[in-house]
Length: 113
Length: 120
Image (cartoon, rainbow over all chains, first blue to last red; front, top):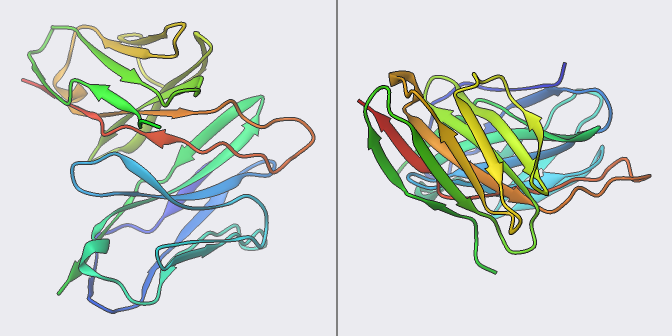
């Protein structure tokens, strides 16, 4: 079946450290891939997306590349800030009859000053 | 455009009661999905409505139901509340998917702030 697996948190980093949050997926067909971010007390916001293999999504210094060969969509940022502290969700969207989303369990990131 | 709105933002109920949550999608969006978010289970899909019809359904008991109105607003109902129903309930809206020959169609979901339900 279709699924998303992302690394468990929490991830704790110092400000300006390099961030990687791993995400792998299993899907039949050609999914689109997303990273969503949830700040405390808020709903999810789309952070970036990639719709086909080798696409790179980027936003606010975050990047992720759609790797079909490794079925991965790892989130990276070169220098994190305290304001990046949030929960990050990897998700896939797939048109299979109707359009379906599958979310990972979320990874909490805490950035210390 | 105004974002997705959910009411109420916070709700406290007791076991056995029922509750109705409301979601107003972004203008022009016809698809509304509902999710339950808990610390232990993460984000779990409840159901999706499109043009007043339930199009997808997750693995939740029949106590969880929903509906969508002609203006795309949606309500979610939980009957006979249990302690385990305490959660953040998120609503997300999207346009109709871009289907057809384009295999790489996608459909971005826009989330509301959620309704925090506490069952005592």
